[in-house]
Length: 181
Image 1 (cartoon, one colour):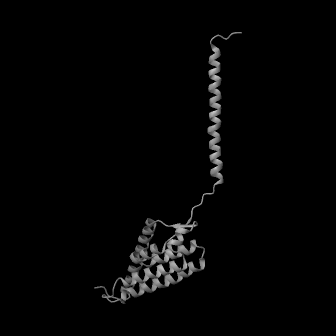
Image 2 (cartoon, rainbow, N blue to C red):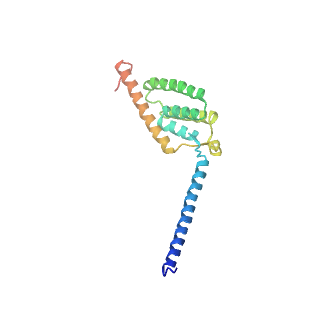
Image 3 (tube, rainbow, N blue to C red):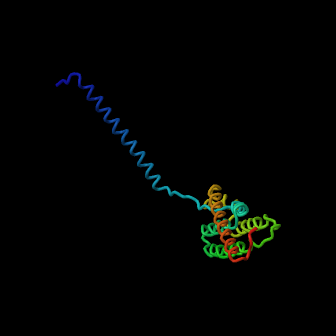
């Protein structure tokens, strides 16, 4: 039985079908292989902490509230909850004393003394009780927080500190402890 001119057509269709099946198998096998490799690979992101320099600069320009926040977060990330709690307590006491004392400082008191003191203290605590920048860089488990994140948190902490300071000044004014001229 002769099929006439249809013999080549069937062969071409069969070849195309086989090419399609083989290519479909390889495409899907490749995706399956990629999926199993991705599934087996553990996605690891290092714990991000603040560097001593980020803490010092933030403290100098934006106030002690940022210092307490950054030091606390580092201690939490380093699994040192006792030190994190101490920073909150002692930092809170320091900030409260600062808020109470600031309205009574003389006008000629150098404005840079408190920022330098808090910046150096924050840097000292971070370097001696947490990790230095080099230690963070060398560690596969830790990384840096973005400077933009530090800036945003610092600005927010400064706004909160200014609101707290304005509230203390208003209370002292109402109680006639200070006079505004």
